[in-house]
Image 1 (cartoon, rainbow, N blue to C red):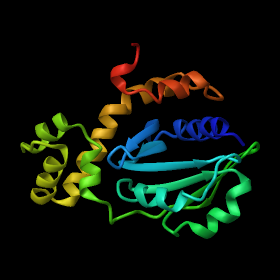
Image 2 (spheres, rainbow, N blue to C red):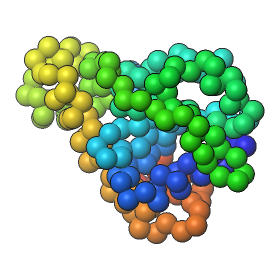
Image 3 (spheres, one colour):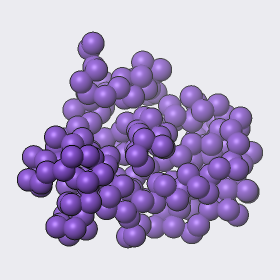
Image 4 (cartoon, rainbow, N blue to C red):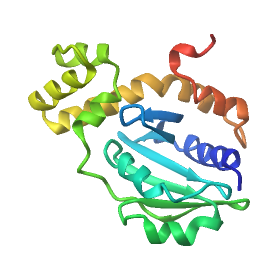
Amino acid sequence: MRETDIKRMLAHHLLKKETTNVVFFEYPFHFGRRRADLICAEEGMIVGYEIKSAFDRIDRLVSQLDSYAQIFDYVYVVCDAKHLHAIRKITPERVGIYLCAPSGLSRIRKAKAIKNFNSITTLDAVPMESLRREFKVSGRSKLELCQAIAKSQSREHIKNFYRQYIVKKYGAQTSHVQSELGSAISLDDIYSLSLAPNKLGA
């Protein structure tokens, strides 16, 4: 299956769930070096999804998932049947797997909660003004700011703040798409769920 087909099927599956607060595509993280194909906020947890279509390579998957594990509560690979056997072999047990086929989406392996996230990587995914407002710290660079917060705050406080930030930033546009959800989502829906909130309607 093509990446677009997998995105549409996965997003529709998540948007149908009453526990889903956020669905957002192409989420930048890890100091701008990575983009999660899709993130989801569900039951207070942030889940990262890496998509591997029939036309994608998987030779960089392990390093991609290492980055995902530094910030997300749960991580899934969503793949075409072509890659399923190889992905089951190379991914750690904590990473969940979904198989996407024309007949539908099926969970092959349930993800396990990731506890050893990186506080600085997590903080870097939040704008500087939001960090200053929440934590009342100063720093000349984003890295200095993140380091100061990581030293002064508990890991759980940092993680909870990040979870709340994601819901606050992306929740409204997700709710809008959910309110008009039909039997499938369109390419326009995917586009609107890929835009930063301040660019909607621009």
